[in-house]
Image 1 (cartoon, rainbow, N blue to C red):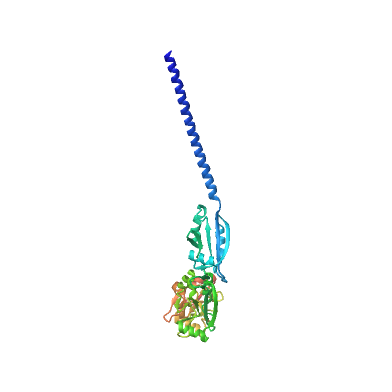
Image 2: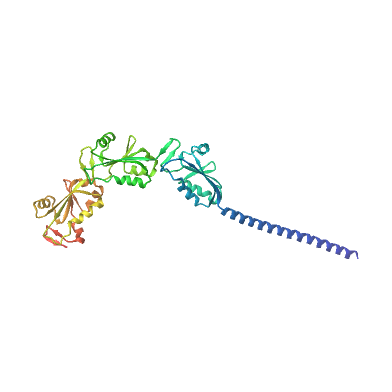
Length: 381
């Protein structure tokens, strides 16, 4: 009887322990599930929060400056980020607040803008670095526009900087000379803003005084004021042209002929083109076809002469240079001033002892017509 009662008590005790153990397991499972669900829910909530636009404020610091850098153009790019502008205002740079902001953020160029708020938010944080390469940088927890392209107002100099002055010296006596306007146009393509552009003729007293004082050796030329150094790409371009610096001017002279040599007063690079034909060869190619090719080598023709092989001039050229095939062309010795022509000429002709360029590979023109073989006395088609 005692054994049965003991067994019953043990059974009840075991059952109680099982219930407790099961309850603990269920509680732990519930707690685990609650933790997991809460974590997932939290992550979802955090992810949703991260997707929300960053709340920012924009403070524009204004300065009366006609033609200066357009801050709004930069801000339009910034507004395309995942942001929400909750407040935007303008502060005059001359006001007390404006002066304090300029001092606090070390602003040297105006107009400018300061962006504050959630700029550290993950969904826009990296964007400031990308924007920074073009527009500004993070300073004291704010994104500050400080990479303005000129012209802008310099707080250091207390004046508008970046308005470039230019003086072009042309030569009315050389209408075929190098087009110096092409340099001015390229500078404008690089963003250079000209505040004053002057054109002088080489014959004018003012132009001659500049040529003498600045050591200009070639005309036409263009003088660019030192403000151009604020334009990085423009400076690189001028360096490529071999521009020199004298006084407060950057001087670009022709990179290719023709130009007037201010030392000798003569025009360099205007070649004389002699075209040699044979009127008996009615099927021969048109010698004028060569004229359309010369510009590919930047050659500028100043004078043209055409001789038939039956003329005294033609006979003299045939004999002097041993010409065996016509039509052909000859280019005066100043063709040497054109590097591209000099480089390619050995493939098509010869340069004689007196410097004249003689086209020899007449057979290369067969696709446009026949030619006369003077030595064989027959037409080759």
